[in-house]
View (cartoon, rainbow, N blue to C red):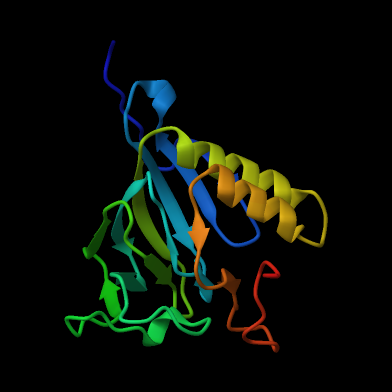
Length: 185
């Protein structure tokens, strides 16, 4: 098997209502790790969640994100930004060149609190779980104006995403700040 070189701007691109995801290296390429370039728009909050079988790595290429990667003293409320670990760790506002490693079983989240898009390199293992997750979430979002929360929950259950706080997309231009992208039940 030969190696793979992916030039800038190349790779299969998926666009959702909240993110642009470009597949760079996948399980089909022979990799055990899926590698993506993700553009996180202003106001996007993935929500705190945990994976029991999946590990992840995030590297900020350009911009800033709020990052969380710890088990809090208490998983309370629907905002992870106020959580604190038993050691006193809190959410970090991280810029270009920062990274976050998330071992399996660790609650984690990211949010773009700025008014500019953030570009990050995202790796998930084992491949191809997150590849399929991104493909299927695009299908759900493309199905109509309203997102079916039950379909999203079934997708999360299938791909080891245990949501703790709501996924939100609150672009700065929206008047109704705080509205979840996906209605949680």
